[in-house]
Length: 315
Image (tube, rainbow, N blue to C red):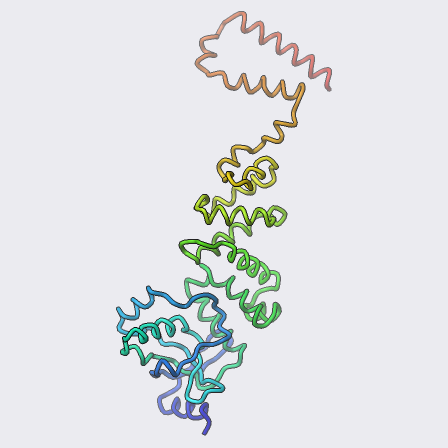
């Protein structure tokens, strides 16, 4: 009797239950297995470290895993199982066992009655993770990137149920997030990358990306939403140059908006703008004091006549 047949027979004795996970229907049963008989999946969609001290504390507080791992019969190693979902739980339980907490050696599992195909395994994992809070927070871009590595763009888009164009955008954001290093919360890199990717593609040059990631790493930009100010800064040559400099930041760059336009104005246009600005700066209290002043009123009449004459000449 093969391993799969033996497991299926055991499942019939215990009582298999059906689980519909999206388009895939699984027949599974609950059990406990030794942690060393469970092997991680080499084609795991989630990237990065699986070690988590907070999860270890939760395991100890609950006196074991609260949620069983979903596993399948290993296709090549008899008596072993491969993880479909739950690698972080397995990793951190294993750490506790290595520290002498042998009570966590036997872990609760849900075992499928057969080994899944690669596509089924990925679909099941994605279906489970889409129900969790982490999916929208930080996982979907990472998973899109990983799926492209595993099965190409068309296959990844099909598994995720999105267009290739939508997939490419997720991959772009993940690749951008990898440039944000040294953050206190590594998961926040996706949030920063989403904001930066929301800018016009014409504005996001390599020098802009380098400047943003450097200033974020230096804590000179602390709120990801502040990156939206770059929509005004980057099209302005003076403000942009200042932001890209070592000393520049978002706030000081905003103060330089319009500087280029002011520098290019000369002659009559500049004189008129200066006069208008000077009049605007006169306080209302001063105007009240000058009310009825014949000398001021005469100058206003002269200015009005001059402006009318100027308009007529330029029309």
